[in-house]
Length: 293
Image (cartoon, rainbow, N blue to C red; front, side, top):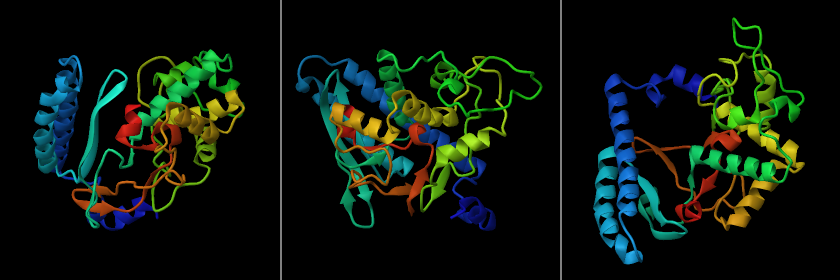
């Protein structure tokens, strides 16, 4: 489905077209969530000893999470509290499937979004250790057909390097909305299309000049990792999951490991299947128990 056309025809269907008041509420919700996560971290840092040291934290967090979910209109979530190498507490709140009264748990699968980038960075670091990847090499050293025009008004500049992509200093435009996110079904061969598209685009600024978050650049790291390792990226990341013991984690919604995925909701209404096609920038599905590992 072309959701942009759908939303243009019926603005009421567009979850991104919100009033100023709604945007303010969304900012408040994000702030509450940030405060919630910070409180978990700070309170945990104050504990010591065995699990009993966190009993007060846990008993404080349970009603706090429930109240914040009600205030923000969150249908379901899962949370884990980790101290060094052990999970102190993990549980679900609310529902993973409201229509079927399925409760969320520590084993409920969620799309973990940009936490996926951590895995791309880990895989790149492993290749550096193995001598297969040099992060100060230009991107074109691994993707020989990669090209992008210099910033408008500029005659050139430094090369886009793997380091600049990892640190969001590449200058590569951050998001390509034409196919990066789709409803109903994923976009096949998205990275191939992305590389062709970028060949007609321009860097937003010279490489290594300023920080600018780029999902697009991190998505291209999947191709870099595959080229440097000589292994299909999906095979490589599944091997990483197995090494960590993340047996309830998958790289894409089409994986056979996806079973028990939470439904998605927007302001209390269920959304259909929603695909982020940007791969290493945000497509992993996992549980809090697996993520805690």
